[in-house]
Length: 319
Image (cartoon, rainbow, N blue to C red):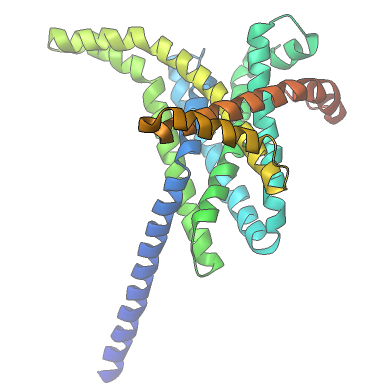
């Protein structure tokens, strides 16, 4: 009997330790996830544009495919790579992030170039066109997962830098919780956004009150504008995040421009509006990071479309 009691005591002690570990992981994941809020917002703004133009019945399946690809990005590829780099080759993290940032700048700038000069460059036109409409969905999903990979890498890296864990196992568990939580939050929000017009139709046709029907009709009319606005925000977010990664990466390697100038201008702007200094400083910094990202992206367009893509033979524009 004493042996059984001792065993139960051991089990209880193990359960207590496990519960404490779960609490520690949850607390660390919450703290790390909060640090990634800006990139999460960018991710949610970027994704809806990938389902525009498809039949309503295909919207949720496309979002599911992208969400599944995002989980694979985070849990299968980025999590183990992040742990290896953080513990054995942390000097590689910044260059790899800068490479991803450059890709975001290129993609955002290419979309703006296509809008401004739809027939201005045959290489860009070929890069943005879809010869076979049957492959459009596949190409959109691949492009979304590719963009998600860059944003997910940024999310996982920021989260990792915020984790104060005693060992690699706790780091891994916390990153996994952050990755799953962020993916559910982002693509759950995206699903709600893109299906909101269907909700509006349902309300307009079935609501029991005139107010409910009016709200439904308002949702139907508003959603095309909202989706277009989100697409614009998504492109701006690519440039902002990509530019910010490059600017901070250069500063990390002791190349202080354009980081220094952006910092000085943002500080000056914040002093001019002391009642909203923090918001003004953040806004000016984000805007200037985005302008830098756009300029870098325009420089990268001919490099990628005329040099890198032909060398790889992969039609780099599958996004």
